[in-house]
Length: 86
Image 1 (cartoon, one colour):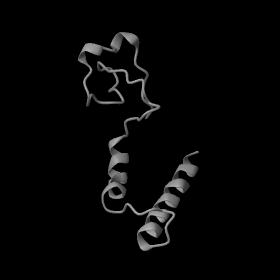
Image 2 (image 1 turned 180 degrees about the vertical axis):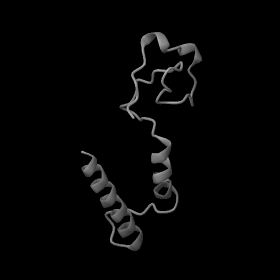
Image 3 (image 1 turned 90 degrees about the horizontal axis):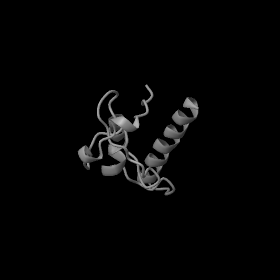
């Protein structure tokens, strides 16, 4: 479901804090984060899917050892899933 754009009237800079939920909940007061070139928020489902690769399965996908092979397999699967979406 696409995120609805926020209007200028719904942005309250005095209420924005680090950790404010992004993307905004439709109809709620929201903060405007404009530095997506540096980083961007991710959806909870994405964080859940990526957690193993940040914590226990962090092998270099270019390496021939078991850790690398497992990570390469995960990268290849993710690329195929994204390609299907496009």
